[in-house]
Image 1 (tube, rainbow, N blue to C red):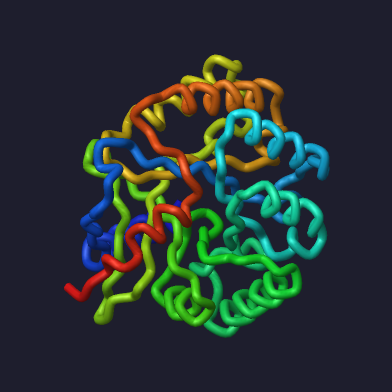
Image 2: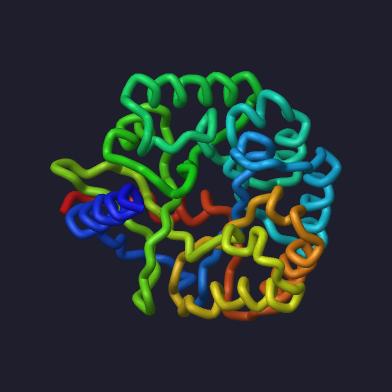
Length: 272
């Protein structure tokens, strides 16, 4: 409990002194801008999982059906063990991002361990001929040292969670003595609160819809999923599918991979 309080204080302090909104200059200002992402961890999540390659193919086929391209933040060890699924993700036009090599948050790594983790992921990425430019830290935990490795390994964006509570949701930049040329996209939430909650299909749908409904026209935001959580309950999987179908019927949103939005704004980073 005490450690959680310290973490909240740490991140709140960094947010107050170092995060600044990027003023977006896009033609989609009259739309919501949403990226759907997956944290693809399998057994390296730290939880008991039981999903197969066929399960991943099923999710990809469904994304084809609803015509949504997404971002898959993938653990390096998953790429090593299940390279065929990563090939299918890329072949179907989805973006592959990094979820670290060993699914360990940079917040709890010392500098040497962090360097090894980034180096190992870069090697796996190269060996599997994957283009990776986005990063999402496990548990959303990050620290200042992480930015040096993001830049060294040519990442252009990462994804963070910020509880905006009604404020405009926009990409951020991080400035701490110097400005880091990393776009920080914001997620409004994921499926984690549903795990083990025994929600019905309708309740699962309403949970995801509530995440979407708290966003406004002009906002840029992500909504996240874990394949192993989706398959932990038939009701979660069905509610997830209902939500994606609902999302594609909305006229006020553009749905693209996270890299699409990052590329659109990365040149707007300027020194404050």
